Length: 573
Ligand code: PPS
Image (tube, rainbow, N blue to C red):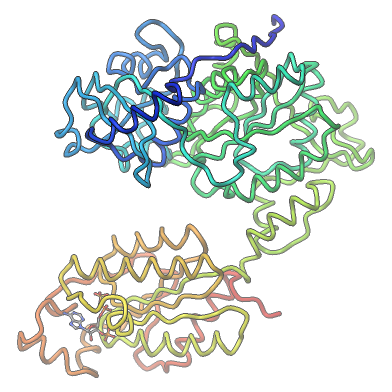
């Protein structure tokens, strides 16, 4: 392959000068505005600062079609990922082709204006097939495309007014031109970029440094801090980890910069995209590994892309891109020699002990508080990860009871709360149906809409408690499966969600009729009463189902405790 060298001249940005920006900003206040989504803010930032050079705005319909079908814009320029301004149908109705609109961030600050030259309804199934390889919602970007992105796309050139504001790690975020200037100043003529969305461990440090040595280049650790794959370690933690790793490289060989990219997890196409972005940031080489930007399994449990598809597609286009691929070596620890070596270069495999810890195994060890050896990761990194993700027995969680009125939810929830408080260690909050309806939802009735609001509020509070390391015990009727699932998703972003069906039959509840409500419901004096005149979706796969007939409350609560123990949420220390 031919030797790439940097051309570190500035690249075009979409910003206007400071004075024009002030003027434009005042004028733009009069325009119809669009409130950018989190993803659109990331895209806009890279459009404006030249990270997406040569794009001059959100793709027009013609460019979009070309990008989707053959990774090329209408003029033939290579570009693998559609960058669109998606809006709802209702919003699209208020915007006409030819109009200028103001693009605002989530606080209403105007970041740019855009001249809308195109407005169309894309064929999303086609986009999913072509760009992401399958119209399968298990792919995070396909799920986003169908369930979050607006139905209509707007295209047209963007005029940049100001960068999105970041309050975190400001000094470590660099535009392409800032990095180019830095490389110029340092005299770095060849730069290998390493893209990552995960914490770095010793093997990464070895492989990146080796890659730089082989290319006789300097190294740029270029982690994504925009949007990554759902479930990833948050970027605050990761950046603290990266800083610890950075100290391990020989002085002035390596630098780090944060990239506010919204990843799509599009495997091969994403690798090419990442390469183009790094080229714009002044890099000459880019490390591509096995399954680069892989989205995980599809709905049949198989990989979306072949393990080397990303490398193949990159290699095919690297000449045109002007950035060279560096192979990612699989580094393993050789115990006898106490060093990392590339797996495919070890000649005496039979005679040495080769050690490695997979991502899954690492997560298990972290969640169970087990040892993580020093040969695997730097102690500072492990400390950061443990601080953010304490073992399960120290994390927050939510126990969510559901069942008919009078099924015994509150009684069991109360007993559970007392037992957990007796154990101590974590604060416990009981969000009982009646308590919530008095405090959080006093204005609500029992229509479907109101019940959903009520349950979503409970879910929101429970997820906050869970996030902060407490235990939330919820005990509403929560009759609708879809709403319970939404609450589960809210909570599972932060900790475990344990759904418990208190499976007392409606006949038994009516027979007990503790509050006399069933009688009133039968007489039609209470309308929409769950189980009598309003539906209840029986949970299909709750973590636990408890029978209350002929079993005392203490025993029911104990069953829950056993379940929590078996899930590792309470430890007997
Ligand atoms: S929901 O559906 O989850 O929002 O209900 P929830 O907040 O748990 O409130 C249920 C309690 O309110 C009393 N109640 C009714 N329940 C069901 N349907 C109707 N129409 C109704 N009207 C009042 C009932 O006593 C429930 O108390 P619990 O503690 O479940 O017995």
